Each structure stands twice: as structure tokens, then as C-alpha cells.
Image (cartoon, rainbow, N blue to C red; front, side):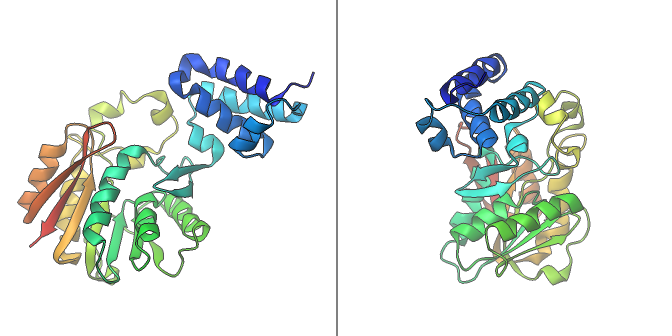
Length: 285
């Protein structure tokens, strides 16, 4: 029996409420919109209209995927970050609000510079570098990752946002010497793997079972990539250039010390929207 859009929404919300809590309403709206091919606002406006059985079947399948811990962005195949809409797949981490902090740090120091050059290392979907390019119309950005599947997503996002004239994507290993072809950089931005080996065993199912371990595992103390990036890529920054890192909860002192160890000054820390220190910026002498 066909049901109204409003009833389908309430049904999905009730089903998701035990696992999703306060996010159940948003998830139910997004999944119903995705199942119907409508916008969220259209679904809300059509709440008294009847939906087809096919839409109900699609919605139920998406809800069941969420109940199996699959993250909403992977079901939708896209997610919004810093005012842009990005393709996301299980080959890349989901862009999260935590990453706004390091993006802000980079944009602040680059704003006003003429045609700044930026490297987004360990780029994943390309969310940081693409947000910078979107906010700074004359910035030239290189997205880099060791993962070929991640780079494929990043390249599709470059095209999605029509930034092909200013943004490129290349394969680079953060643990090896940064190649000269990258050029002189005004800023290097990096959200590297920072989960400790012990924490990797305790990740919640939605992360452990779906998000790429390659982008999460930061070694025994979670700091392997910070040391590697500072050692291998600092030479690419111009004098006065900035190295900007995102990091995990409680890692701010250790990352600040690594920056200082490699000669960076004027260390700036930044909190995320929840008030947790999640990013640092250092200035190259």
C-alpha cells in the first residue's frame, strides 16, 4: 500500500532513532530525498502527497544500510563541506566539521596573497584544497595522495566544482622526499592519518568497517606522518610559508613540538566547532 511522504519520513525517523539519536530526523529527510530524487525542501513540501512503492523500497534499503553502520555520506555518495558539495566514497574519509579548523587556518594566512600556491597532502576527497580554491579565486592548488582510488575521487571533485584551471591532483607519498615539481609553496595543508595503533582496534563500526584504514592509521603514537611531512616537505615552502596540520584529540602539544623541532615559529592553534583544539599552523623561517 502506497504511503504519503510524511508517513515515510516518520517511519524512517522512528527506525533510525535508537541508533542515530538527534541525527535521526536529518538522516531520514536526506534518505527520503535521495530515494525519491527530490530535494529535501521538496520532500517536506510534498509531505501529504503519496510516494510510489519503489520509493518506499529504496528508502527501506537505505535505512537498513544505516542500521548496519554504513555512514550516511557513503549512502548518498556526496557530502557538503565548507560551502561545497563533494563526491565521497569508501575510498576517502568523510569530510567532517573537525576539518573546518585547519581549513580556516590556511585560508586566513593565504588571504590577500597574489596567486598563492598550496599543497593539500593526504588529500583524500580533496576537501581542504578544494575549499581553499573555492574561497580564494586566484589560488593554485595541488591535491596529493598515495591512494590511487582516493585520487580518482579527488579528480572527479575537481571537475565537479569546475576548478580544472587552478587545481591538479598527483600521486605523492608523505613518507618520501617531496619532489621539486610541486614547486615553491605558500602553504602546505595536511590532514594525515593520526589514529594510534591501539585506537585503531577500538574504532566505532561506522569508521572501522567502512572508512579507509590507510587514511586513519598514524602508527604507534599516531604521529608518524607529522614527523614525515615536516622532514620531507618543509623544503618546498617559501620563507614565511605555512605548514598547517589537523590532528586528533589531545595531540596538539606533540604536533606543536614537532613543528618547533623542524624550525617553525609563530605556532597558532585552532579549536573546532565543539571547542576541541584540532589544528595547528607554523611559519617557516
